[in-house]
Image 1 (spheres, rainbow, N blue to C red):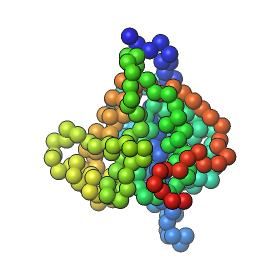
Image 2: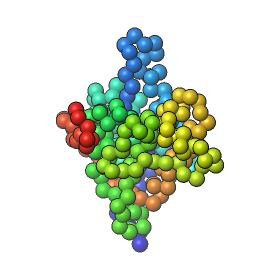
Image 3: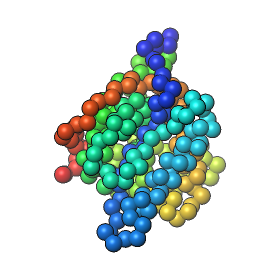
Image 4: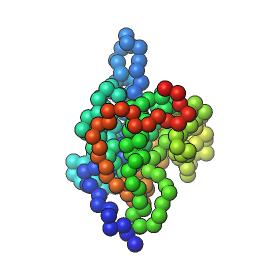
Length: 218
């Protein structure tokens, strides 16, 4: 039996990309936007793929990413609305991510929302997708979660390259494996939005860190 509480907002983003802003040297040409090109590229390609897989209301963006490139300076109403209404949280994990109070707060705001299956059955699953942005051996997903892994790829070498180099590395090397990983990630996002529902909960801007990732010293 379907859960009668499920009411989808046609304009809410289906996914939220959470990442640690890379801060280049002060005199580096191009500044922070150039340093975070790979995160924006991932978001753009995910958005294209998700739009190809689902029918969205006209004018509704499929996902959200913080484009201010400042990271941790200010909670905007747009960001709070997105993290409080999106259905899937895509975390681009790196050591810097796990050391970021800003990223920890984004994670906590999403993780604190109630998740149910759309068919009404009990679930212990999560709609958080920890992505190997840096090589897998550089960090571990918080809360005992497992890495997102692009299963069912035509090339058996894609998965080990993804875990060894991280998606950031594949994009930086212009490795075709990155295209496969992003496509599989888009498919997983859509799969989760069809099977689960995360109850909206838009909070006001927190005035202090909500959490620290376990096992990390601040």
